[in-house]
Image (cartoon, rainbow over all chains, first blue to last red; front, side, top):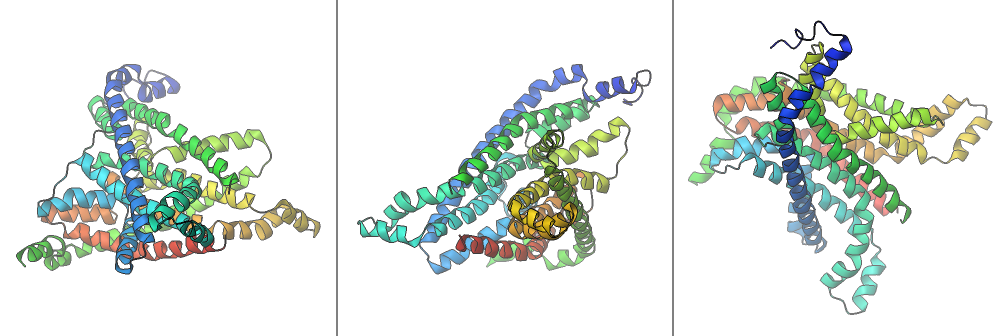
Length: 235
Length: 226
């Protein structure tokens, strides 16, 4: 099992290839890691949808300016911005079962990251709503639109436009948190790669996992860069 | 009433907090040590990245873009596991602390680098020209004229990233570095009680909440000045 012994007779470069790019090990575990890839994508999409929806909902509730409710929202938002996501996941996964509220790893990770994304998104949406000039509100109201109509048809479309660059970056950062699911037994990319590495006593599956993350997130990061410049011009 | 007492025993158990406090406190110091290592290292790396960006050469610029995008694309935990579990196979034994420092350096220097680059690019060229015409050298102009204004312009982003880095240190628990979250998990699994995790969460909140508040204010002030 000593990874150095079969490599002893080879050159350093061959040894390196054998250790990190062993074709046989990679072929064996590629299907499992592909499954992990799909699960990561599924988890990420669910988090983005529920997190952004909850964040927008909270920002809309906040715009009614009901004091006690807003204090509650601000507190919740601050809480989920201040706590490390892994601490939230660990708390949900290991702490809540003590009072009979147990979730499995997938649900835990989804819930925790949804709350974190919602907190950041609420803050960003709210900043966007505040940035729409007061005249826009007044003009819309004077045409006979109600409060919700003004918010939905006049204010939000402008606010959301402004929030796209910061929101994109934050969303990318938080969906990368799906890797934290490996701590609570979610069979996503990292955890399948790790168990494959333990099983084969070779780090090639980890290389495969790294490649999977590059395939998944490099296009997202580049798209984020593009969105940032594209929407920055229009401000 | 009974459920309230149950909740108190499960999450705010005084007896357990007293028993767990020594290791929680040692975990807190380790977390602080990590933050004070990773943040300055990341800032320094980010500054180097941002300064290299100003070199007008594609041979410098393209590798930088690859570096920054690659390490922003990798989830930090993946980077950490790769370094900690992968490097020994290549013949390099690495301590958990060194693995965390290296992994987070690659990640945070990319983020800080992007932020500082944006800051430097926000300073009009005329500023540099004016500074140069007074007899300042290129580096003096950068150090005394461009950078101070650049940092001020992106201060909210720098603080926001620092907050993220501080939160990131909790990932070190995955490679068994005895920081706050790791110690809380240890105490929780020994006592079968969630109080240590609750205590750790409260410590993180108390430590980082001022930063969150400050950020919220800075962000709103930026919008108001628009």
